[in-house]
Length: 235
Image (cartoon, rainbow, N blue to C red):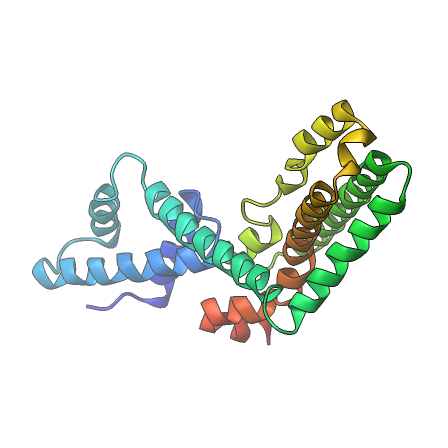
């Protein structure tokens, strides 16, 4: 026996009722449940659809589908981190390494020639902070508009939109800034210290640019690569 279209729809509804909101995970679970139910029917043709579904769902344990969702989140989170790392490494290969070096030397020169070295770093950080919050606000607004369209949700798309585990990246330089403020401008008289700090701030800027600009701009490509059916949904 094969499941009917109506029963397949019931399985999708069942996954939604059990807190699986992403279409890709729903599809995986529906395929699994449908195959398992059909195997049950081969052994016991008189078993009802509801009873067979109940038997299969019990196999997922106390937490139901949550373990499946969490494992998928971890796997796709690692994939996202890999994308960030790949783009990050690109800035240390030809030709982008030229840009990385130029940005570092430019910031180094600007700090070295200034009488207010710490103020420049604090101001630079505030600019990055403003950029971060602006991008997060803009993204949140876009997501709200898409939600009104009632489009299907994809887990990897959600991870990209929430910037993986990098959404809190902006707080990383705070401790360094506090230390510099306490030490004052006299600490930044050593060229090697200035160069090192300039390099760290450039690395931080590149990371933010990758997370907020590069990957979101290529999101459609990465989603089609992850979900072949994604392109069909967007036609």
